[in-house]
Length: 373
Ligand SMILES: Cc1cc2nc3c(=O)[nH]c(=O)nc-3n(C[C@H](O)[C@H](O)[C@H](O)COP(=O)(O)OP(=O)(O)OC[C@H]3O[C@@H](n4cnc5c(N)ncnc54)[C@H](O)[C@@H]3O)c2cc1C
Image (cartoon, rainbow, N blue to C red):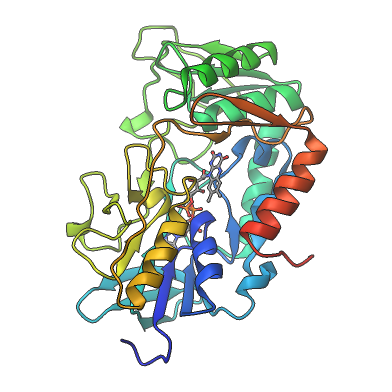
């Protein structure tokens, strides 16, 4: 055990899952949070982030200092660059270019994954993040025709929100017959109808060639070319949402990563072969959809760290759902539609969603209170 009186837990990555774990463990453990961002910068709801940044910021970009339950938790604004399992230490490169070595009894890896220009693992200050959000919103604002590549939740959400809230022409390109292949067939059918009704031009069976074989990590302006044989397509701006993800795991030993770089975990979310290292969220190879962020993986990690610290075996198992669930289109004027794994959907009116879900469930229950700015 480290020199601290309570067992020490280091949580790497304070995003959607890392924050939940840090706030819950801080009472019984000596917790240290480490993150490249000084704020929760959620990967959720890219559509609203681009079209209504002010509304998006209120729920999805929240300074760590505003979380009431993080008030007494030390955090380091920086990047984990090495984990040494034999000495149970993590080397951290701080945002001010200094570095430190921190020891742990338990380690939680929650560093997420990049899936486009809006999520990455670079260290950034609050001002830099603000600037980046503004720059992206301005580029969208200046374009008349926007092409979106990718028929997953992100592409669909951006396409619909842009079509609804702007007078721009929106084209959505995807390689398959249907959108949202990870969702229940009923969800796919319903969302396709909504997109068409909202004025999105749908282009199924269009396989877009990736420039230099890679998904661009920025908004681009070059014409789209198709390996499926259609004529090239020119838009003022192209937004890439191909769903190809890059896990933030380069600082971890190779033997705990799968062929794609995701962290191999067992059903308790314990890292392969380890007794005191957990991985959760988008970086963890927990199931084919890597769904432990939204399927309560953080609760599994907390229960198992509590058990192990009391000398009991880890007991709580992670259960994945066969289909993705949750909100796809985000909060819109017509409300917030939430889909269940069985394809059912329910809609909260916008006013109720703001009060019940964001203020009540997310801010009070999940985060334990957010201070006003
Ligand atoms: C309660 C809940 C509900 C959800 N509902 C939905 C939904 O309705 N619809 C939907 O689409 N999705 C939903 N999601 C899931 C969401 O889309 C993503 O799965 C989620 O954002 C991934 O969280 P994460 O913590 O794994 O990664 P992230 O939120 O990306 O956090 C990772 C953090 O780690 C930092 N980091 C990276 N590398 C390092 C390093 N080396 N050192 C230190 N820090 C590092 C990153 O900068 C980032 O801040 C939900 C998630 C939760 C928790």
